[in-house]
Length: 352
Ligand code: F0G
Image (cartoon, rainbow, N blue to C red):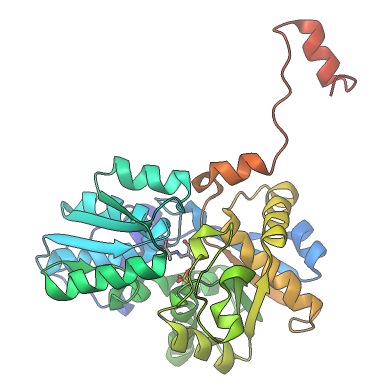
């Protein structure tokens, strides 16, 4: 099923028709992994939705298959987006697949290496600005309003339509609705999409309750936690380095209406949980994704999430996206001469 992509899997519930040219790279149907060691550390019954397993390594592919399929159907010649990295990597790949020109505008010096490489090699026009994601978004909105260029940020309604399918996959794999969903929040698009997905499933009669939605943010860009925009967002979790969430209202409603909330985590906490995820469970995600684990830990500490709760944490992007932070957080390789005795000394334990 996976190679068919999520539009074919969920065609009946998505705004596509027989004339829609499906632009797919086989996205969706990502693993839902039980995480017993990491769960014990958090005091919850933990599952990980490993969205780094999408074709370009992040959940953005779910929205991009929809956005580019509809752009192709509408005869678009070019698409544009602002991005902290993952949206640009995904837009570049799906545009290449569709044969449509792609322009991405990014905050200069603040995009993780893997994401930049993806956009560049896929032939997108990559524009760096001396400003933040919020500045970039302001500019691309003007471009798409004044010129015949389709915006593929999550303001594009088809993006969230694709992203909501992740909720249905969790329902399919778990067989029921988890008590809590926890995910990192930047613009608030993804938490809005999951909430919509669960509500639609509930309306269809596919489940008998709804999860509580917990949004996790980095302290330096915690616009939802603080309730006001952050003028100069700063965090090592560059994917969610956003000061003015465009989906603030809907993301706030998802947390409020579900009986959930928002939690912040420091950069140090985020990096610690990034390490725990891969060392406890072998799941390598980018630091921004580990914000969901760090936020959950703080929500546990503050009593928002009770002990033993069943929680699905969404790990939104792959660890290979951000090699610089991964290397900075790990021990360097042991360097030895190319000799048996030197290797033996390391292997047998007295050479490290
Ligand atoms: N996690 C990752 C890895 C992301 O790349 C993003 C957003 C989020 C979480 C937050 O999702 O914005 O819907 O609340 N990345 C965007 C981008 C901004 O440009 O790639 P959100």
